[in-house]
Length: 528
Image (cartoon, rainbow, N blue to C red; front, side):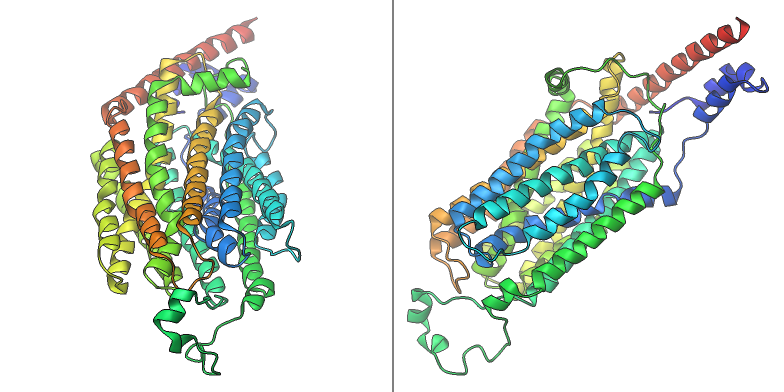
């Protein structure tokens, strides 16, 4: 929240020049330039990596892990995925409300939540990728630890998201820090894809031939000793009980802890950079306040549908590559291309939204749609798949960057329209996270349930035609329709570049007036 430096320094000169004045010292500290160093921005950005690393690993691989490694029935896998994400979504506004009501400490308001939630979060994440040595309670095991991890990660991510408003009072600095954060977060998705994909790819269990495979090519599925001699594979038993998934999850847990430590010691949460806080409100009052604000509702609903489209693509692309396209040994590399492309595209999108505006960038970011059509229209072709994956990564980068870049604008607009309501930034961020996670749960649940209805065969060398058709719909037609709905909602989003700059000036004027009032009160107190 910006403070006008020149006006405040002039109006506070009498206090700042008084030797020994505690009020003058406090005002001097408060009105120091609020610029972030590159080191501060990098440390802040690193804090966003754990959410994306774990989210990418879970989003890309949990579905195929539950179906093909844990050997859970697709119906129960859909329950685990949907209930886990739905529970995660419910905890977001709850944690946002608790964060907004939590007291200020010498470490800040947001950072203690981040640090205290980290140890239990990494333990629960580690146990998600462990196959328990019993059959009857497998579903309960995965559901419990999946829900537990999502709850603890919410205690990390919601305060971290709201921390954007407290690292600097300058809007330009916040936007710059957001670009750093998005770059690191996309790098985190690359890291999550690389760690999980490459390590687990080495332990990829051989497929199980079905009746159709044996009838089509009986010589390939004989019981002769030469079966599968062309490429060494690891047995299902080794995949389940061996170290592959545990090593991958252990490495990710270590990175999670390191990122939390860097964030805690590298970023200072600032107090007093906002207008004075209003009186605390109840949870349901907060819901009504946030969701009743038009620009925020349009932004959230627009990105809800576009995010749902990208999540359908993300959650099913691994299965689509391995089952429909037949790239069982290449799908992890295809996913890695998507994430690398997204990483490279982040600086481009930061330049684009600065040059042409954020709302324009939303529409240009959907240029990935033709490639989504192309990848399902042509016959299996590895080169074409890589090209389409690269293009998809450019769209993923826009989906990462734009929501988090536009949310601070909505919060600023809300404060301009409602100057008496402040201190509720965490609610705005938590409800956005709530809707995106709910969309993720819906996408994973519906897609896995659809595969069950289509007759998906766990670890099958080939799938029925109904499964191939279902996967094509889930990675192309359905995401495109959802993106179109989201874009139609974003058309009426009212905050353009002109209004954003006007809000910035109005907020600066409001804070200058508040600073003048504080100065007059302090001078009067000194006279008395």
